[in-house]
Amino acid sequence: MPKPSAIEQAISHLKSHWRDGKSLKEVAELFHVDAGNLERAFRSREGATVKHFIDQRRKQYVTSRLADKSVRGYEIGAELGFADDLAFYRWVKRAIGISFAKLRKRAKSDFHKKN
Image 1: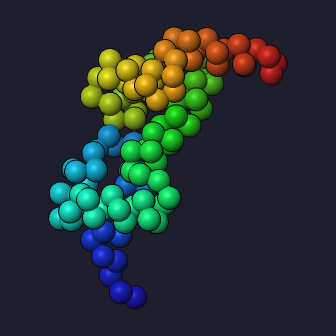
Image 2: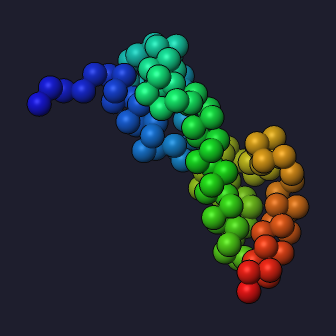
């Protein structure tokens, strides 16, 4: 079986380590490939940019973790590789469109509606 190319290895790494918080540039450097070529190959294979792919995974993860009422926002942020809690809360506002506090309230009310 032929050894996967460096770009294929980098794509596999991005898909399996999306929670690490590494940028496309960092992964490209890790596998000694051009970041632009990696982005194009990823988009061609996955149908989405690396950023969109990671954001989608993060959104799913955040909403699933909110089911656990005892988990704190900064804990979720750390699990997702954010440098600090402020960066995580800003990302939530930008990516999901509402503040983390409102997202948590919504999750709580959705939980009560189901039960």
